[in-house]
Amino acid sequence: MIHPAAPAQPKAAPLPLSETPRPFLLKALHDCGPATSASCANIHLALANSYLSSGPLNKTVLGNAARELEMASQNRVLASQTLPLRRSVNALLENIATLQHYKARIQQNKAQAIAAQNAADAAQARLQRLKSLLHQHAEKTLEAHGAPLP
Image (cartoon, rainbow, N blue to C red):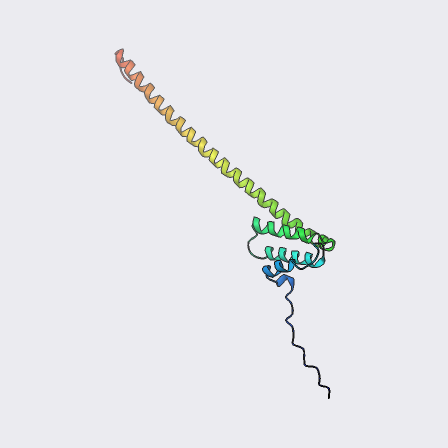
C-alpha cells in the first residue's frame, strides 16, 4: 500500500531585505556573487536604507548610506532607480559640511569680536589713565605757577 506523502514542514519565509538586520545583510554580501549582480545591489540598497532609517541623520550615517548606495549603483538597473536617493543623500552630506563650515566661521568671528572688544576696553582704560595723568599734571603746573585751580 502506498502511503500519502507526509506534509512538508513549513519553512520560515525569509525576511524581506528591508526588514533584515544589518549583521545578516553584511553576512549575505559574502555570498551574493559579483558586485554588479542584482542580489548584491539589493543587499547594498537594503543596507543603505537600514542606515537611513536607523536614527538621526548625521554625517556618519549619511556617509555610510552614500557608500552603500554607490555600491548598489554598480548594477545598471539599480543605478538608475537609486539616482534620486543618491543625489539626496549627497546633498545632505554637502549641507552638513557647509553647516559645519559656517559654524566654524561664526565661532571664529565671535572670537575676533571678543578680542576686538577686549582691545577696545583696554584702549579706553589707557585713555582714562592718560586723561587722569594729564589732569594731575595740569593741576601741579597751575599750583606751581600760583594760578587758582578751577
